[in-house]
Length: 367
Image 1 (cartoon, one colour):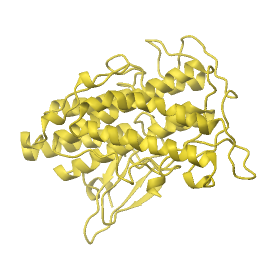
Image 2: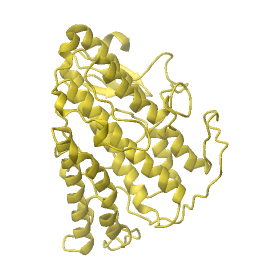
Image 3: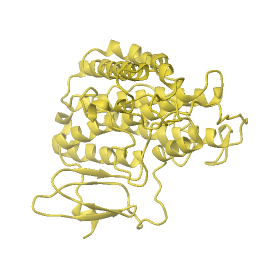
Image 4: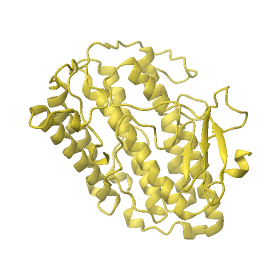
């Protein structure tokens, strides 16, 4: 069965709201991954890599906010505080890439490879069928369709599912859905309360600006900014506003060399910098709260960290639901979590036979 006819596009406002909430989960799912790598670096070392990671984290917060603005604009309700919002790691990305999982692990070449997979540009691998791009697989009542993507057989069942090669393709599908639903509803699509929009004064970032969303043009601009900041623009290392894409930021760490304007993709020609892969705490990967014995200092430190992380998510949820002044302190709070994380990463795992240090835990409430 041909996937282009069997697998439908986003066709309703409700579907758009669902996929934009998934976009919030997608953008958030990278934050614990990048934070854990950042926490694992010995203080005072790997300064270039640390700056690159911090810049990417700030922009992930920007992406969360842009997706929330689009969701609010079409009458949705951003929710980052639901019990199942934070995944248990390792996990597949919510956008459905099937060829890799993401882990919360120490700063390493393996972690950078994962970061590059997360942020990879929307280019088709040569082994995939010609013209096959990421797509949304919709379930059809009393009917099944099968679509092949990246050697994975995807069976359509009761509810919608998503399978994309890249985050960029996931957002392209949402942009297509905006066009489709706007053709049906016109300006009625943007029925959300404009008072819930986060404006530029409530956010700071090293690259990119908050876009207030109130029509089709601004909605598409917000989502295109997310795409460009992740993978560059028009086969370039940089976004249209001159910011280096996350994929190429992380590639700099892999290569130990900076990009400069004018460099072709995969060929940075700027200054070299040193990456010390050994100046890292050997953290337990994908740590869960249940990995640590109750009553131990490490268990309490992990519990305190996770409680503070959920407070961070609740403050962001409040910011997106009528209290925009909460956003700037919430972003700062993301980095202050390092004080709690340091109580874990500098201590051995208390489980007998474990040779790693304790690692920060995420997602216990999803268990």
